[in-house]
Length: 265
Ligand code: SF4
Ligand code: SF4
Ligand code: FES
Image 1: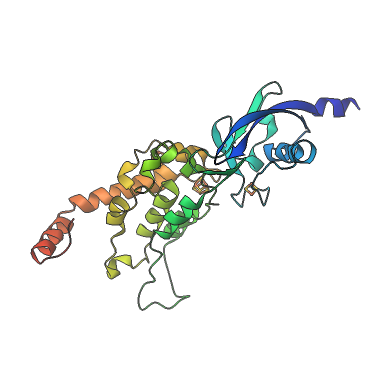
Image 2: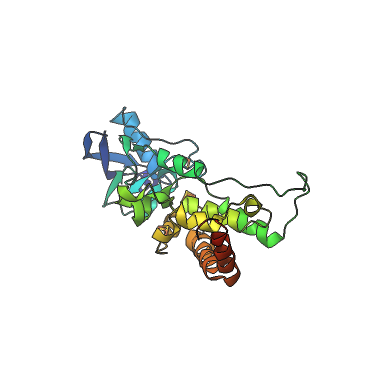
């Protein structure tokens, strides 16, 4: 009896409610049980007070990337944020992802990310190597594996200051998740993009907005998979893009290409 009393309490939640036409924060007092996460509390709100509260979720295990929102202004997964990280007295504010248009309540339209995903040309299989015969060093496998832990929650995209409050930058900037994809492919030892005339370092700069990134590492800080987006993807991609620009052979090649009516560097 006393154990139950000490593990249950009433929390104060402030939840954004509205749609694309506008909305407001609404206050709720809601019961919390030991071991619960913020998504449990949102579900209890739905069950007991606001049955039409919209929230997107699927796995409740930090793997589907659906339950992204902002808690006290920080991009987080609702299902992986334990109530125990907050004091019992504090007000917990839950709002939709700020960088994307609201659909309703805590649900946002993240289709910007799908557009950016489609803009990254996919892996180009090496010619003359049959499927199942691909071989690469373990360190190259490990590098790709880190990037492939991505659950596409888009918290990194939401927090990046380049687009967070700058809708006007969205067209030119792919965001950390998709620059990481470009980096993965550019560093992939079997990717044969160059043989088809696709220079991923150049497109990183010219088409995916690599130059907008000033390596603040905010994306890395919010990634629930702990991917070192900035250190392991964005900085190496920047270094490779600079190398390409100042590589005397690349420079010479581009000059010859220009004289011959080829493309611009
Ligand atoms: S490191 Fe670059 S991509 Fe990541 S949040 Fe900062 S500016 Fe955005
Ligand atoms: S890189 Fe991390 S934060 Fe970004 S979408 Fe993938 S899992 Fe989410
Ligand atoms: S519900 Fe799947 S990551 Fe939260």
